[in-house]
Image (cartoon, rainbow, N blue to C red):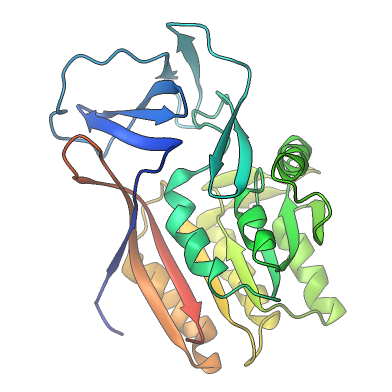
Length: 288
């Protein structure tokens, strides 16, 4: 196994930027709204000690991601953002993020370049921004998320983007159960995106623990791909795992398909100084 790691960098765009980070926090802009959120990996000093955000997230004392938003100025319940032709809503969610993950942008672009005419499965698809990027490239999507609220948000984002008529199956389902059923049905896909949480529950209370459930899910994903398939992208956040370990898992499961496996870290470039803030680890398989 190669020890080479790749860094994938999300650059700022008109409606998003990592303005500054340090002392365990990050200052970001989402359109006209600026927010401060906890960021344990920002161990250095910020470029500017005096931030003036519209809202700040105050974490809870537990390890399950609890906390609350404090609004220093009135923030809309939701507001519209865009990246290229894709339009979507941002909001201050109870889970500390803003209803999409901007560090995924380079992964969306990479998949989009391979998505023309493809049939793609998006597991843990959340509010659908990635699905819409791929749909805009004439891919056919099956979008799966356990949260009915997230799937409804994805449908609303499709309307905002003018893509409501595209071929997207919006599924409220448990990712592992859905994938296992697709295997039994003999289905195949050209590409798969999975962006699983560390911990979660399905629509019927199904328990998801990344360390226990990831390998079986990847094995089922392999059964949905064949030698004519194009890619699989896996991103992993907030876990005590190494990129090398995730890469070896993907290599072992998908190695018989040939192609290439890339492994490494995802990061966002800070606007103030250009430094890189790491956000996640990833592994992706492709035929080219």
